[in-house]
Length: 392
Length: 115
Image (spheres, each protein chain N blue to C red):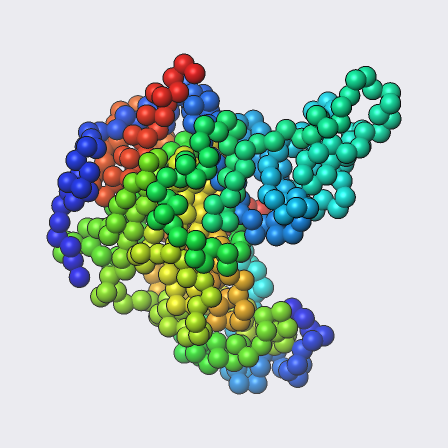
């Protein structure tokens, strides 16, 4: 099946520019410093999923280097998920030292044994009578705005909107069905010598699929008669975007893939609210959710692109699926994970080389075609946010 | 792997219906980085032989393994499951790249540094 159309999205979105996008934002340290203040300290940032802290007292600790913060996300004894700076009120020491743990009674600082409950309240100060004018009730952990959407935990250091307001139409497009089935199955995390936007832009378009992934997924998606990628949906919700792709009805799976596509495992336990066989949801600024449809279950992969420096990014990849109940589910889930790990390996091959190319100053602009419109949308939003918060 | 809960006889390395796959027991690797390393360090000919042997038995393998709960898999069945997982890893090389390693990939260095 082919779709012989050109410049569809530019016609759909006539108010968006088609001009080249300046590359400066990926290489200038001063731009990076402003992103820290104007983007990352003001945006809702996804730091994990509630499946990592299912029980009361469970907590995770996340380093948010771009905001110089170490964040404790903890499910209180009242069941509420809260976020705090992981910093003791006494003299600022790190409170929880493990990446993951459980608060049984108090979380106790290693330094002088100040103790906090699962809601962040300061409950115990050794030798309290020897202090001066302390009021424990005022000295709980410093909260960070925290909210949950479809099981994913977001924090914000200086919220100007609620998470629901921030997500705009995403909340309507991404219906709640299926998300409560998702569990974290596998994670990769590695540092790249590239700007966070260079790494993320590489995921945010389908144009590269027929080129960079020519061995891995030839003829998988719908193309023009000449074999050029064509997405099925491109929608913008405020700062965020979704692109959808359809598997070509003529696609002949490779043998093992075919087996995984055919495994009849009875009714799926997890159907995500998908409108296409593959969906890519970009949640501004640095979080992406990818949905995949398999007969056994739908799967979700997330990307976090954490800026470390103008030319350093920590890329986190997480695979979510229901916990497999039998071998068929385990095998199809493993195939999907192995296959996508290889896809991301191919993708990553261009991150550091693109960064080097831009740093050479040989080219001053990124040239974007119609299928790369989501990248353009992202950079337009970034520019607007940078300008909006100028001088504030 | 729960050896003490094994409900199959521990007489053989693989379940009785799959004895013919015992020449490939070295593919019964329990972790993703081990399976990835085995693919990377094999020749494409070695991968092809394993792939051919496993692929035709996969429908029967899945049907057999589905009889057991994943957390109480007999030790012989667990080996067979690990071999089926290795087929996932190997299939990428045999079916798509026609070489053991990902073209332009960094693989273990990227995803499992130090392993």
